[in-house]
Length: 198
Image 1 (tube, rainbow, N blue to C red):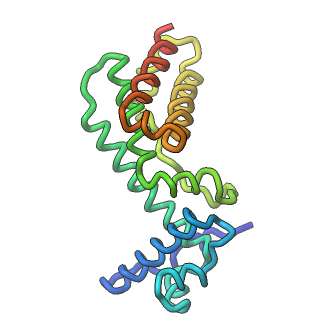
Image 2 (image 1 turned 90 degrees about the vertical axis):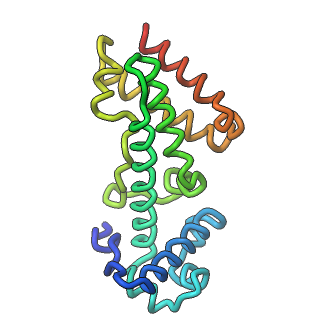
């Protein structure tokens, strides 16, 4: 069983040069994960791609898992920020407006480094202690409002969030033009609103 400390950086970079080194390490790791996959990710490969000495890498990260965990933490932080931006722009109190906001939040979240997002969700080996909690696509206040009045509101909230996530996750890869044109969002909103209005 992996220890949590193996997933944390050894130290935080304080100087600009150190921050640049850590950024280079993380960019190199992201490149390797996206282009060559998890099996190709080694600390030596990351150091070589980043153009840093392996000792410099180990100064900040004890393992390749710690590098990936930091990459994932940063990715989740960017994702949360994009979701928050969409919810800040939310307009209207009707059911369709709330569903559209949720769908747009899902799309915004998945457009943050989509290739890397796919690696995180589909390729990396997972153990419970490795997981970085992903932000919910439905704000807690909206969960009860969206499913209000349905026979099983908790199940309904889970279903709409899961369906939205799955459709957007696959749509980014398989139907990118439909995502970019807004067609996927429009169709997904119709689907979810019909379910919620039954």
